[in-house]
Image (cartoon, rainbow, N blue to C red; front, side):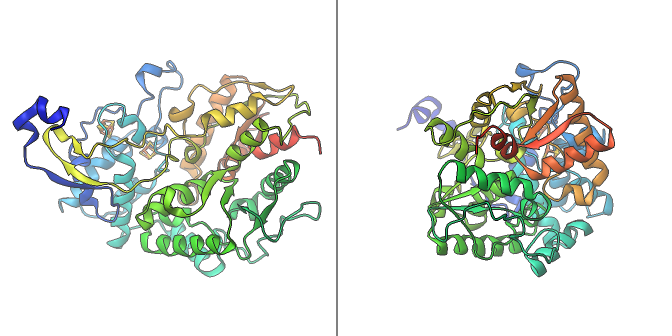
Length: 443
Ligand code: SF4
Ligand code: SF4
């Protein structure tokens, strides 16, 4: 008999209900939706950490629109209404559902108190919206079409390897495969080039996929489950065919998709993928620690770092879960919840603090409490004003800490922030972490 059995006796024997982290059925999150107490812990930055009066909010969606419906607490109620057949899919309801970056801030905020699976509920709600013909938004359908027809987010017909310059050495066969991603391949070649040059500088042989296609991040994020699953199966098979042991991404969204959402889609754990998935941050941090990559060139800048959602609170490894819920909502077998503790917080700061000449200053909302840029997961395409609002708000924080350069580890963040800086006529430069690492390497 377990300690809990002995302590609680009969109460532990109360009838149990099944629990499954399966996003294909919103009913699996009925308990979570029903037990949302509208405390708004998903809206505010953690109280124990509270950064003061100026930047106390974690939810970009609910800051953009003050109605509670836009926050997680509203969406949990909406989910309950939809599941109970009390709410119909109206245009407004669908807008509320999708004017949200699925940034996960609400999820880790809620888990400070209640251990509700908010992020999975929001994903399941979108999957239901798509199944019932209500979602996604027209701009997001267009992205899915682009991927189906051209294999990339933008519907671009140019060669995917156009970014690859002659001075970069790529192996035909290697243990490491660099998954470039659509943004770096087409919109941000400077990130792909910097990443490849970092591999070269560290003496790490790497290969590219023969016919790389989009990771499908947006397709999954907007609830197109079946399409995303097909992409996951095809991409995983393509990587396995290369024989690579490690897949490296330079895009935070690709990273989360490969590491968390592919296993989720295939009902396996991250460990069962058959190869390791890491972000460039992890690669570079290890290479510096092992003396393979030397950051010796001074970079005279005062810079700050934005924890992109998908390399912070959203990237804890995935493990399927099936169990039972009993007395007081406790679940058996016990579970270590995904709370964003495995984010690449330490590795990114190790790197940034190792850059000679540079002055690194932290933003106010960091790590799990980071404020989303507003650009990812198909949000910018469907709600450009919301995306700019979120980036502008974060830029205020960058100015408040007096940074000259804002660094991120995701091309979607870079582009959204750069647009905000340009529109606001800000004297703030926006760079990707790959660019700043490369700037500190003597080549
Ligand atoms: S989602 Fe969680 S944190 Fe947000 S209001 Fe509901 S119970 Fe509170
Ligand atoms: S995922 Fe982010 S934007 Fe959406 S409700 Fe949660 S905190 Fe707000």
